[in-house]
Length: 203
Image (cartoon, rainbow, N blue to C red):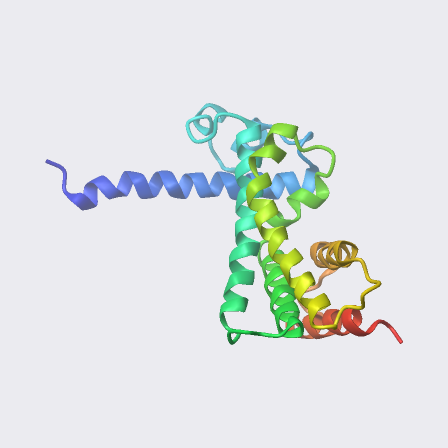
C-alpha cells in the first residue's frame, strides 16, 4: 500500500501545474485579450503540450471562468481581511477606507487576474459571465450596503446617486492597475487621496 506522502505528491504536482496554467492564462488574457489567446498559446507559455492542458481544463471558456472567479475571490478576500481589522460598528468612512485599501491591494497584487475583466470587456462569452455572476454580485452587494450606510450616516448627500458613486469608485480602483507604478505613491497614500476626493471633492 502506498504511503500517505506518496499519495499526496501527485495531487500537489497536479495542483501546481493547474495554478501555473491559470497564471499563464491570466497573463495572456489580460495582455492580448480573450479572442487573441489560444489554448495552444497558453500551453506553450506553460511549457507543456496542448493536449496535456485539456487534462486540467476542457476549454478556453473554462479557463476564463476560473481566472475571473479567482480575480473576484482575491479582491473579496483582501477586502474581508481589511474589514476584520475594524471594530464592530465601524463608521462609513472607516469602512470606505478599508474597502478601498482591500480592493486596491488586490488589484495591484494580482494585476493579471484583476485586469482580465477590464481588458476583455465585450469579449467574454455570456456563459462565462453567468458562471461568475453570483460571486460578483455578492461582492457588489457589500459595496451597496456600504453606500447605504453612508447615506444613513449623512456622509453621502441625499442628492447623490449611491449606485453612480459606487461605480465611480470601483472604476477608479480597477483602472489603477493600468497606470500604477511600483516606485510611485504607496497604497496607503492612494487610499487617503481616493477617500478624500470621494468624500470631499476637489475644492
